[in-house]
Amino acid sequence: MGEGMRASVLFVCLGNICRSPLAEGAFRAEAQRLGLDVMVDSAGTGGWHAGDPPDPRSVAVARRNGVDISGQRARKVSRDDFRTFTHIYALDQDNLEGLRAVAPRDATAEVGLLLDLVAGHEGRAVADPYYGDDAGFDVTWRDVVMASRALAQRLADEG
Image 1 (cartoon, one colour):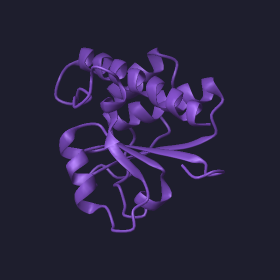
Image 2 (cartoon, helix red, strand yellow):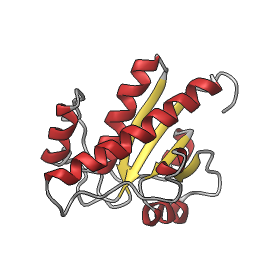
Image 3 (cartoon, rainbow, N blue to C red):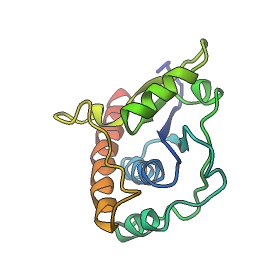
Image 4 (cartoon, helix red, strand yellow):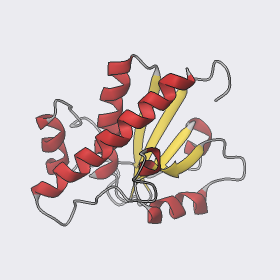
């Protein structure tokens, strides 16, 4: 990041109703805990849920962990996001490839896979709980909290 440039992070999954809202909520909480001045958002590579709140199971697991994501609304990632955000993290390889396919030539954001930030988890996808039971959302929460802690610490260290 350039000097004086405020960090901004976008988390991206497919529909922006399960994993990326949880990542946004977990990272927002961790950034606040560390006193980081950072802009945080989430989006999906698909737009069919645009305007919808997060999946009720995502809202519930976040709430059980002291984080309120109920006010978030799904949106589709835009080409402008690649210039607006300093960091864009996909929650799985398919969405990473989708991001790279739509990134404009003048993109300035660092684009990567979220769990690449966590030693021993490189190349792994954040668990997608959508078609499973409620327990899957706990696994997803653990994934995004682990990555959020690593990312927030990295940004704090970069100062």
